[in-house]
Image (cartoon, rainbow, N blue to C red; front, side):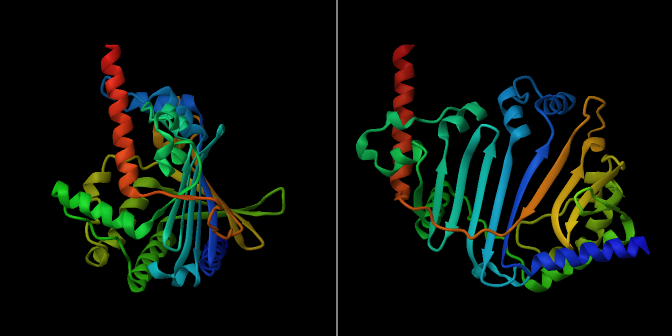
Length: 326
């Protein structure tokens, strides 16, 4: 009875979430720099390809937040129903980049200096550009800029044409295929996943789902494979051989419910690492009240060709400067 009750509660929580018109959630790793470096070391990277300390530090504290807003319930929404999307990547030191799509425009702002430092690839500074650089200079200074989405798509297509690359079709799933995929996931979970319920100290309810990793993934792919012909072009499913060496250790996911609403999901990945040095490695998703996506005030419009030309000029200046010094 507990197995059936827990599964039903999760089903109802996800169905309720799907009826929302706006969903906001935050995704982050629950780990530390030392653990990520230990994982990288165990993968035996080639000399010079080791995970830099700066990147490990960034990933261990990174939080990615998403908001999706639609005219219809999310479960019933197609591509044309979405009226706003937002994404933000932040660390313990502040926000790195924020991105919003509203109407005909894409809005972006970023801390380019912090991004360059973290990734070990410095980008041009706003000081490297003259005042007439306008919107590009503001973008490098961390201010909001906006880009015409249609113009950006056009420019991207032209660049792909010049390079000889065929533009890839946008991946889309029709409602019928989405329902089939959901049914496949539910069928696999019902067979392979064990559920356990417990009460939280704050009055919340916890449902822990546990399953052997390789078995769960293999069974899920087996259910989805007959639907391969209905998936978007370019989507290739992994084969059973791809997972034959994957650990079959039991992995647990903890779902937190408050008054029947899903508020957090925590997946413990530490056992999958098969590394004694890895003590804490988890993936945490926090769901919050859906926030309305709004256009930031004062955003300066940035022309795509101006942006490409400006970056090219700035990089050439840097190279010339380096040559002079040499």
